[in-house]
Amino acid sequence: MLQSRNFAPSSDLAPYLRNHFVFRAALPAEMELIDPLLSETAMFRVILQGDWAAEFKPGIWQVEGPTILFGNNARCFNVRVRGPFVVAGTAIRPSGWPALCDRKASEFADGMFSARATWGTDTDVLMDAAIAATDDDAIIGALEYFWREQLAKLGNPPGDKTMAAFEEIANSDSTMRVVDAAERLGLSPRALERRCCATFGLTPKAVLRRSRFLDMAAAVRGISDPGEEGRAALRFSDQSHINREFRYFINMTPGAFERTATPLLNAVLKLRQDRIT
Image (tube, rainbow, N blue to C red):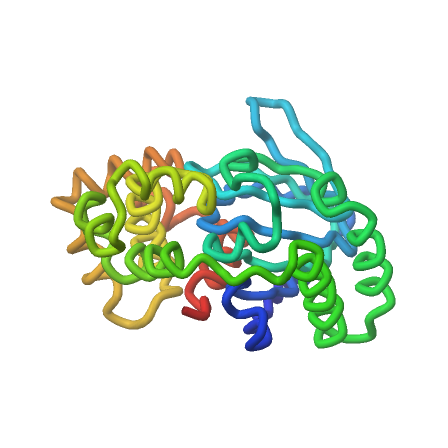
């Protein structure tokens, strides 16, 4: 019923984009699915079919589209989908963000926005091409054409190699202290915070804390590599620490999370697991 496919970007786009994806769900027309989302990258989504909305205040649902920009999330927020849907999109590397958008990532954190307001009528061209596509490869081709156009408009700047190095720290060594990460990158802690807010949309401390939680969430879901649950647990001081983090990020205990179906979040966790580093 739910099928999510992830695709590596072409080599010329890899410094800027983490993954592409196409997510299809043959749900009954009357079905409503509400699920928490928590993403560590800005996510660009093209709604080819379906009705998507996000809850940013209790009971208040925001609708954008058909091309949507989701900012980085400090904590989860609810997304509502009604009926069958087909969604394609791209996870944007924080280190690639400044080459694709002339606004700071912090302006989009924990929000859902019309992508047209950021990238103009190019999103309309992309939408037409994606609708006309006959298979997933053609949809991905349309996405890659769109991103090359955005890079060209900003002069094809290189990705931020320093922030790419911090991405790797967050992925592989999320227990590192911010002061130590800054020293490794040759920055002051204050400079690292400014750079992170501009590219990740969040502070370095928030990025590392969220990465630890997502590692644990993927392990609980069985999405990570075998044995990763034990390694993920070692990043926390004890079980009560794990419990606090689950309540903070997703407002559930680990046990409740394990028992609760979260298909949209699962797709995000799988996309993260398939990341190209």
